Amino acid sequence: MPPSATLRQDARVIGLVGLAHGVSHFYHLILAALFVWIKPAFNLSYAELGLLMTVFFVISGVGQMLAGFVVDRVGATRVLFGGMATLGIAALVLAAAPGYSMLLLGSLLAGAGNSVFHPADYTLLNQRVSKERLAHGFSVHGISGNFGWAAAPAFMAGVATISTWRVALLCAAAVPFAVLLLLFLNRSVLRTTPNSARDKAGESSFAFLRLSTVWMCFGFFFLTAIALGGIQSFASVSLVSLYGITLATATSAYTMYMLASAAGMVGGGFIAAKARHHDRIIVVAFAFAALLAVLLAIAVVPGWAVVPLMGAIGFASGVAGPSRDLLIRAAAPPNATGRVFGVVYSGLDAGLAIGPLMFGALMDAHHPSWVLLCIGLFQALAIATAVGVGGKRPAAALPQA
Image (cartoon, rainbow, N blue to C red; front, top):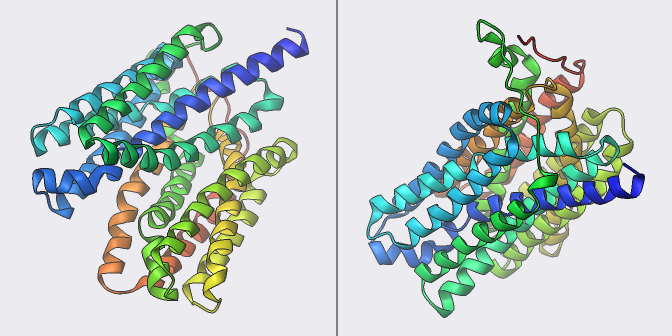
């Protein structure tokens, strides 16, 4: 194709995949945003509310591993369509829930729908976007996820405030169905080639699990997701305890973190597109973020500095995003991208499931500074896994029949 046509196709694929990813992250928080209404409606405890989120992320994490195999066998497009439809059905089940058991079922369905996005999205980007724009594709993919996280609380709480929490969930159900229609209308640019061939013994389906780089990538996501879970769940309340600032200011600090992270991903896309050693970018970015988290933890800065420091942590973490995804791409055999991204990104769900429990226990024990110290610690530990992946050669194709 001529360069102008290639640019248009790349932009179209990146935009569609980014939109789908934003819906996925939007669904991470549709229940959490409604806890203040759901708790009294069913007379639930905080533990029961927390279990709804744990079910979502556990099912999503396990499902991602399985979804990667399905993506490689039947192609990413059909799997993505199925996941999007499942999210919409899950919201309808939640909206009609007469009791806690139905809420659990809805959370399970939402986790199953969410599980397909990373293996399907990254397979689409790797197959349908030209190599010179792939870093920017990964950048947009990460930014769209942040936008989904940011939009969910405002959208869900806004609708529930002027109506009911059930109406808010019905409105949430309309989102994936509308995006599914848009994806279907653009299905011609989203076609991928399945990697359905397997060796006679069936071993090549699982041969990628013997690659140490796959598990180091999993470890990277697991460690960084624990830190992210702490930031999302308890960074604001820990800052209030440590610095005596208002909750509004602490919430502004979290908002600044998310916005700066999105800005960092934009810049990180340009850096990653020109860089050769993506592991070095990750090391510098996360070392800087970890040091700033420790600086906040020891409370040696004035209260007014909390918001810009949280922004700097978010920006540094965002810069590492595109390089991280390119590093995983290099570690994935070209005929197993769905499986590799499915396993690797299940580490994200595992970390997000464990992180809030861990940091919640620290807050219950009245150790707000430990929350920020551990956030910095897990970001620092992730550096070792990035260095391990960066030191390996790009993965070769797996043997096939």
